[in-house]
Image 1 (tube, helix red, strand yellow):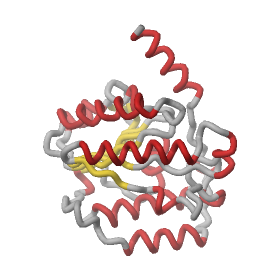
Image 2: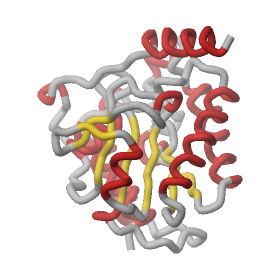
Image 3: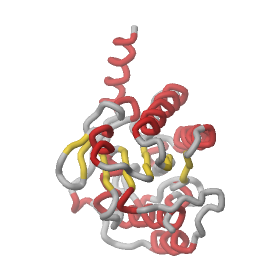
Image 4: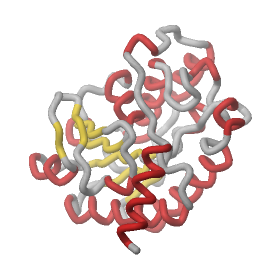
Length: 240
């Protein structure tokens, strides 16, 4: 039965597989919405309940193709980025990730080389068609795994990013599912010691909760400038 469950998860992950575009697919034009979001992000004070200092060179980012985009366009050279296109929370503990340095590492091998003080996790868009309970259970296990590897690290759960209105209308990748996953992730962060939920959506979504068409090339992945918005929000929220 367990093997059947793993087979079903692997099949669904393949169905929901998302790829990064070539670099020239990204827009290089800064939209008014992007400029405003960057301005708002830079002026945001660190959350009062989170007094931990972000040390860029001692930070580890783990995630899927969106994390890859952040590593390329977020203008943050110091952290270590672990990313894999189509990756998901179900294979995060044992899977091999690419790094921005051109090599490959597992989470365990990455932390064996360096004791990181902060870990930023982004999973959810590739799992959006799954039962939220299955997703959260696996996410909770992964957080416990990271905590065992890095007992003193601060763990940040980044929200599942918004999708465009067109993607929402097509089904599967819907605003409602994104919101449900984020509500559950926020609650999970509150349950876990040393964990913090970071809402990225408020800096990227429009007034209706959708990713603007001007901010994305496929309704899910961001244009280059929006990764800067994301990165600046992380800095405003966690950098000292």
